[in-house]
Figure 1: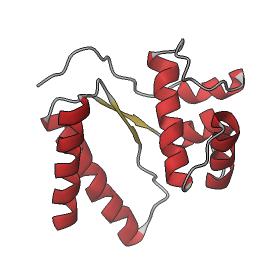
Figure 2: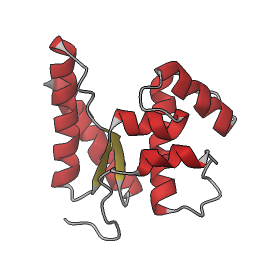
Figure 3: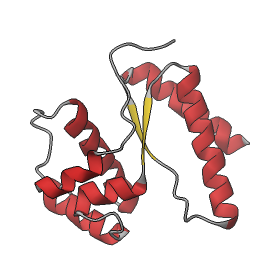
Figure 4: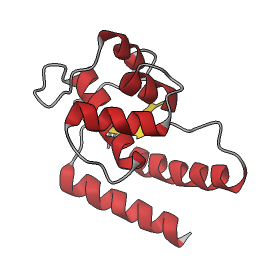
Length: 143
């Protein structure tokens, strides 16, 4: 419970400081099993509840869509997604999770700000990863 409270408080701080129009989250991996799946579900629920309570819209991007946008195939390995993030961004990432977060940000840019100079170019076939993502309307906070 202490960890969940810490995450909730940290999210509240970030929302107050940055006032995001939308938050992009990686959706649940239904391949997770056992205790790890339960822990991730609790954490994800706490994050989503906090965002909901503060009126911050969020988008859940399925892991297969993230992989498809990054590497052109929904079952791309975490290492391939990381490799593509380094290739497309010219950056070094601390780990796969940081690369995944970068790809989620890139997907949000592609959807909400397709003319952004911060948007990395990907092959047109990778744009299929943007399809069937439950994008939300942004512009005003609900709370």
